[in-house]
Image (cartoon, rainbow, N blue to C red):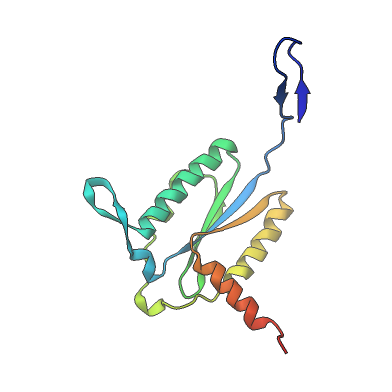
Length: 164
């Protein structure tokens, strides 16, 4: 940050030196477990109740538009998380319409897939994608739409700790 003095009779102004915004690959990991069908207190168009999954889809589209307004070279891909992680749209893309189409096709998993998710595949995918992004001088970010991800990571870490 650099201080610029306008003149002695006015307050001092500050300006930020311009920074290059890094290109990002953002992998959304969307929880599609049965709990994603729980209805929110708010309603959507026509008074129809919104589910958690509906709200997540809307928030992701707002986020994508905001990120692209900052840097149009950001790219997005989608994975789902139920019992395991799987690809919804593997190719990273800056196209908002293809992101919206992927989200429109997303639905909640059946109740038989409930329970804590196995995050092994998600971590493998993220590690692989991080190497590819790094090779292209990009930053990989993984954004999860579930708190259960945090608890599962904690649980797996505790299970793998040697407490003897």
